[in-house]
Image 1 (cartoon, helix red, strand yellow):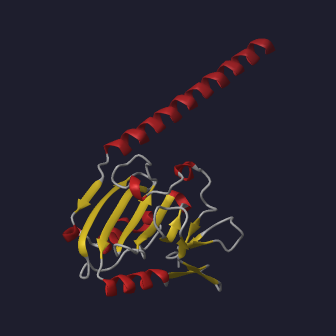
Image 2: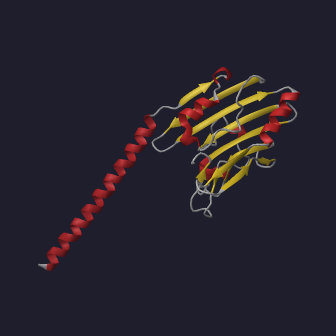
Image 3: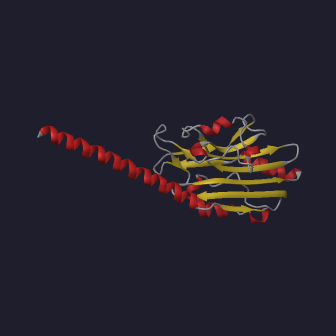
Length: 221
């Protein structure tokens, strides 16, 4: 009798494991299917550039207040703008690209603004920490002011062309290294985008007050 009961119990356990596997597989398939059905919001043309639109619509998913991007287009020359943001079940992915030339005076003012970007993060109690924009001349084809450098698979930076007085502002979430819309603005080393552990990457908008166990975001408090 005991042998039959043990065999019965083993069969029940095996069937339960198979059922759990099937249910989990169906859930994953459902999530992928739902995500694939959600269309991306695509916007292009400098007349349609509106920084606040992205902050209002995608606020929590951006992990940024888009400090790198200018507020207005008034002083821009031959500017181009395009974006594509897709809202998934758990987050959003996509890109925002703004590229423009300035006259000498406005170019200097804009570079000065970028060089002074900061963000203070609080632990919502009695501690705070201030992050500063990073200046990088190695990773990209042009010198860059960087506010997010891979944290949470997100990138935010401005590429500076001193010769042409052109600045390209870039926001990427889960970038695709073969995407023709922004491939030329990516890092020289494309392997950087394949890394899975991104919490040790830089973000001006985040800070850990407990040695990396948790991270506070700029707007958590």
